[in-house]
Amino acid sequence: MTSRQIETDVVLIGAGMMSATLGALLRELAPNMEITVLEKLGGAGEESSNEWNNAGTGHAALCELNYTSEKPDGSIDTKKAVNVNEQFQISRQFWSYLVDQSLLKNPESFIMSIPHMSLVHGKKNVEFLKKRYDALVDIPLFEGMEYSEDPEQLKQWLPLVMENRSDNDPIAATKIDTGTDVNFGELTRILFNQLEGENFHIHYKHKVMNLKRTIRDNKWEVKVEDMRTGEVYIYTTKFVFIGAGGGSLSLLQKTGIPESRNVGGFPVSGLFMACHNPEIVEKHHAKVYGKAKVGAPPMSVPHLDTRYIDNKKSLLFGPFAGFSPKFLKEGSNMDLINSVRPSNVMTMLSAGVKELSLTRYLIQQVLLSKEKRMEELREFVPNAKSEDWDMSLQVSVFR
Image (cartoon, rainbow, N blue to C red; front, side, top):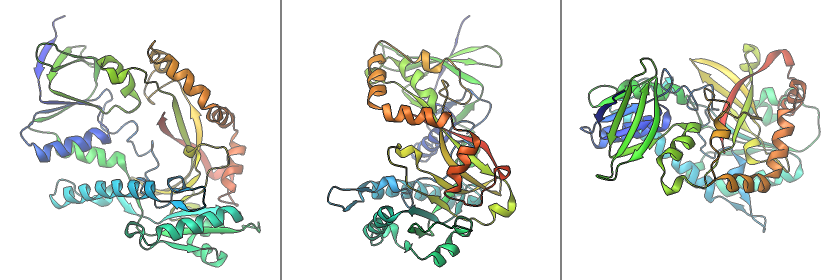
């Protein structure tokens, strides 16, 4: 079969949030540049960017306690929190610019204002949270943060969490009203709908089969199959961006570049419980992060999140760790095995040895029954009933 040759300035692999963002930037900076997006699935934002495949927090370090570590002398290191917040502010500034330019319409369809809170139990954790608050509150990015150990105040902030709470353990929370809930799936779809047109082409159901760099002119040749017709195309381009989420590793390996060697992947996922009982959902309005248990990895930080999806308010709790040999939700059960190469097998084995605690934690989490998960939820929501919650969200965490 003769492959059809197509010239383009840029190839973006994957129609997710990363490709949408880069595409929007390139369109603003170089409007005449020809950009081609290749997506294996039938639409934009259907994998990790999809609103049901991520927690929508945006990660501004307003409530995530793992971004503020405690130093040996007991003081709080705020550098990572400030850095993470600054990065998120840049995203918000870019979205605001696109709204001002009428390139993003109806921003309320993808971003909502919602308080971000941290909640801890126990004397030691309360002391940590107070020190964290004192370290952050005078930094302009965290202006407006409040702190309280008063149960009556916490009942106003967190009525669902404080309802019928009987333990006498010290409890404290911080609250900041400048947090957001971001629907990255909707944002991705809006951006691609706005971008598609002259010089910006999006091809769905197109699978990248191979990538190689040509010797004669140092360009890239991207071999692509139209999954609907079986036709094969060769895109020739100066620049390729691999924004394929968990599918990026296999594509990176196909390039043959030195950076692709010694790299391995381990597909850990985060499972969330969802509550769709409107009476319960209405009692909570915040994203509330706790502190990971001793010995648990940072990815296990429990949180109770208000979400806005399709203009409907819902409530999520998690994450509980999960495992699948697939690197993508729509991937293959052979993804993990096929990713192993002579150049990365030692890297993956040594990572397994170094992360024995993560492996043990993962096994324990996978074996949890629904009732065991409900017991963890009840540490946040004492009155939680099994019939009001189900396991309905899986977030890909490709490590």
